[in-house]
Image 1 (spheres, helix red, strand yellow):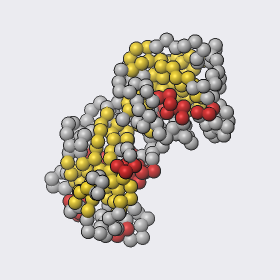
Image 2 (cartoon, one colour):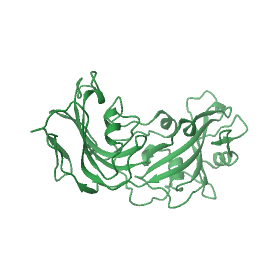
Image 3 (tube, one colour):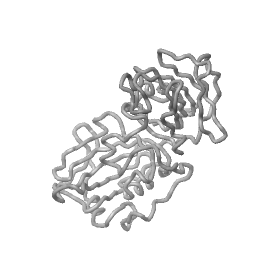
Image 4 (spheres, helix red, strand yellow):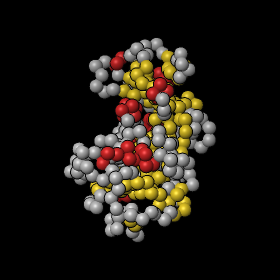
Amino acid sequence: MNKHLPWAAASAAAVLVLAGCASGGDDPQDGGESQQPSADASTNASGDGFGAPEDIAILEGLTWTEDAEGNPTLEFESPSSVSAVATLVKDPGEGDPVAAGQLVALDYTMVNGSDGSVLYSTYTAGAPEAILLQEDTFDPELWNALLSTGEGGELIYASVNPEATSADESTTYMAMTVTEVVAPLDEVAGAEVEPEAGVPTITFGEDGIPAVSFEGAEKPDELVIQPLVEGEGAVVEETDTVLAHYTGWVWDGEQFDSSWDRGAPTSFSLQGVIPGWTQGLAGQTVGSRVLLVIPPDLGYGEAGQGESIPGDSTLVFVVDILGAI
């Protein structure tokens, strides 16, 4: 549900790091049990590196240090390059290893292998990158390394640009820290709330798919935030990344999007969605089910969005908040 599309998209920084990191539309991942690293990526003898042995040796030669502001970075004799993607677990961190289906916050600094310059840093950007752990969105070498770490874990990751004109310009190194791990809920949990009069009625069928009725509903001019279930989890902040199930309808009209129909919840940053979502979900609690009625000025405005959301549309959503980080 970003500002341009009714579904989440990976940030530009994450696209540089992760292979195909776009949420929504994938099969659900099992978040209930830890997974062992797969055999898809080779390891070194000590088991803390994933990739070709010669590339892992290069990562072992990098120095994890701090810049003038105290933020982690990597030092090495440049130019430096690897032949293929590789990851080294520098510190496994504390607690249980992360598992598929969890939300993780990753802090990282990206360093150009050709000259050692910093390309991007979440530290200077002001917030870590929050990502839903799904195997098909990561390089196997990074996926296996993440499954070997817990909170506080530190990794050195090397990616390769296949379009680079020379090996010296092909490699980007990352100093990466797993700063937080959250296991999301499978479904909402909390006390049911009696809706105010005049809001659309949301019902759920035996298949768990929501439906809406506009009978007796009054179209509002302002944002309506109606909790249907009040969860007992953490309070969602406006800077959080949220994992949620949702369905959206045009007022008194057709459904235009639904994570329930796709079979998996969606993760998205509240900084990258339409204002009605940011304002409507910030302050709610994990485990909650929320009905949002969003006027055009907090949705897609006069322009609308594609054929399914005409201009000046009032939008209706039911959102199950399963996790936030």
